[in-house]
Image (cartoon, rainbow, N blue to C red; front, side):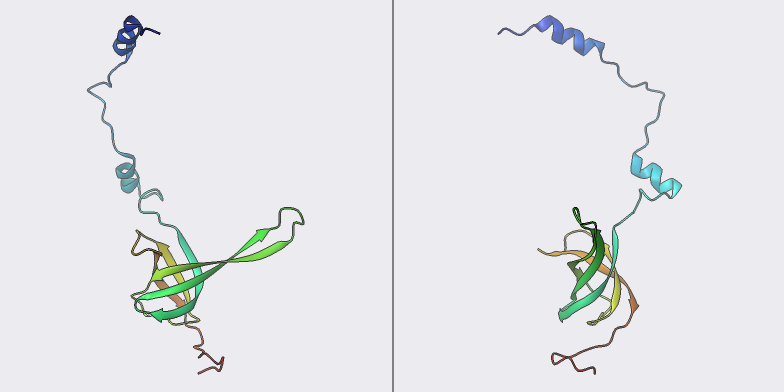
Length: 128
């Protein structure tokens, strides 16, 4: 089927260019000036450190409550995240983690704050 060049040219002419007098401000810049949540907002989670054996990396377990689709019972679900740790969190600590750029294959979070110190337990389960 042959192309209709007349219709293509008319559509190109029909498009309007933005007025030269109006200023366009990027959304991020506008949000940064106003101080709204759109600028610099990062996802945060609060969880418990379950593993702290690696150098500058901890594994944080975050619990959430989910309602069962059929039975409507509330179920506890746990997600684990690997987080970059400059603060020195130990196993059992309650920490706040913040989403960040990929730091390694599995690390996309960093420890922002240690909320409470937990009881350190060794492998046998005896409190130290």
